[in-house]
Length: 174
Image 1 (cartoon, rainbow, N blue to C red):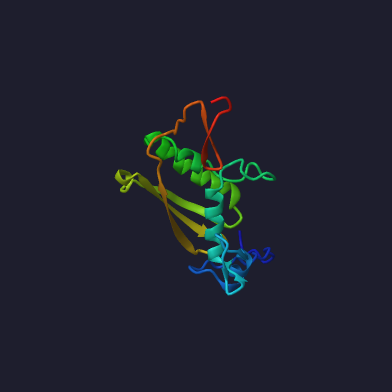
Image 2: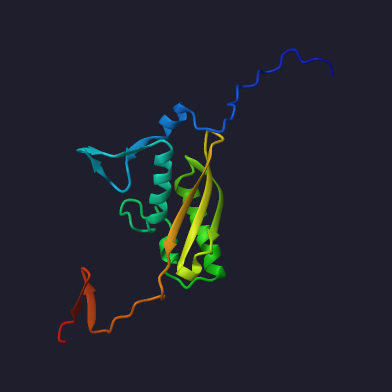
């Protein structure tokens, strides 16, 4: 075999670190904070890791089909939360969360684990724990989101009553 004198040099590879470097913080971007806030006539901004967390929340809280220009943007999470909670819904909540984050935030994060904490189920709420890694670094973070589940799976009004702008209105002819 011998020594290979004419090896192609290996490209430099980035050394992963446990924190997000300042250069990567700048690449993560900035934008208006969600929800929008004005403090002393200045719009509050979200930058770096806060922007990533905000992007996660916006993607998960936006129902699929809500955005006119991007009807595929969002998650099925809010639709699933109004179903009766059982083992199947548990698995679908995890799948909907992972699918949403992998689809819409694949350039920023890698999803590590999604766990559902059912300890508050007696109080009609669940907590979704999301752990993720910021791409381009070894930095990991967790996000904990609480949801209040609906007490019944539907609200039924008599056929002669409708709700318009939050007010009950009688149907024409009644």
